[in-house]
Amino acid sequence: MTGTITIIMVFSIPIIAIVTSHLQKQTKLKGQFIQEELKLEKLKQENFLLETEKLKLELEQMKIEHHNDTKIG
Image (cartoon, rainbow, N blue to C red; front, side, top):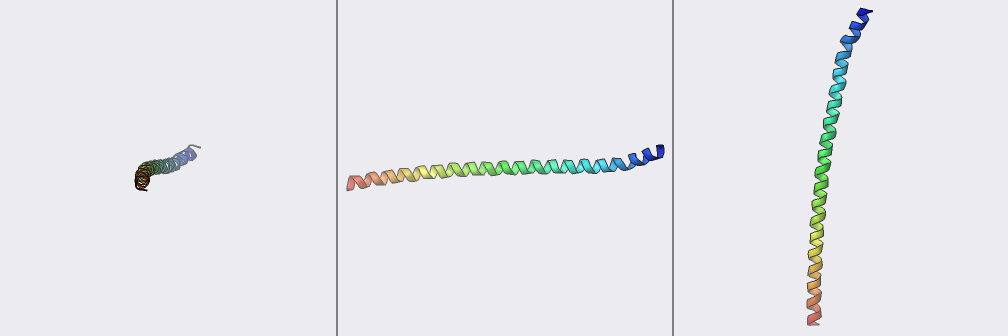
């Protein structure tokens, strides 16, 4: 009985180490994935703000052109 327990203990320690290492790697990869997602969302937000500002400027330009056209015509 003691021999069986010893054998189980000898083989279970490396298996637990392998499983723990695998779980740690998975956690690190998930963390990296979340960081990349965060960077992507920041870029999307910046892009949205830039596009919004561009549209505002284009609208203002159209208003000025329309105002000038109505003055001339």
